[in-house]
Image (cartoon, rainbow, N blue to C red; front, top):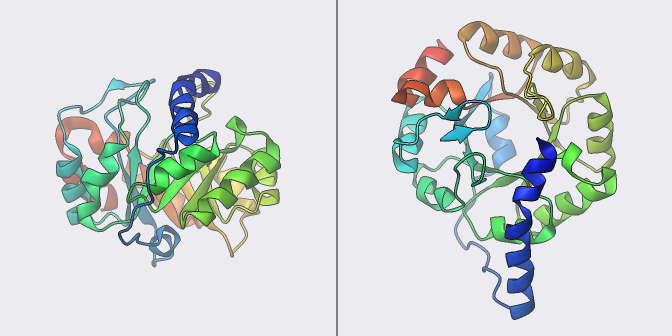
Length: 253
């Protein structure tokens, strides 16, 4: 799947390269950006609630729910931050969703497959506070570091996603400070919270840690919180059934 995801971004990157040559890259967003990592440092397990209309494993989830509806629902139900899927081919996302959801005031993570520095420039033109970098899709520590530094230059934070100890070592060599453990291996789409249980033993107190994928009920939430994670990223279970606010309230009970 990772190779398919990367291939799906080729056209976007080509357009950005053409715009760079033409001198028409988007200008940086001029509004305030809430600090993503600051939101994760609140007491307890912070919820990063995701706007997710579809996925390769589930197909359509809740395409009828607008970004505005979901942003308001999550903010009212206790989310600490938002994750906004902007990948179009497999997740039916849109970069424009970031602008449409900014009104709620929560820091937003652009969740996409960022492979090129010009995608960082593209992200900086939106109200996003952070972007996602997937270690396995980049060229080692140097590739991850290049994009982390590009993000910081644009006043964005980088959430660096890992699947195993090797990924974690690369993330740290690259200077990552926000670590996201994905419990779903994107190569196979299999999910196990044991991944979070194993990797969190390597946690440095100076880092922010997020557990993502596979958190579907109160028992899972309590497990992740007991492990010592700063935050959990939850999408499918919140979007399913058309009641994101109610689903989040029930998950937090």
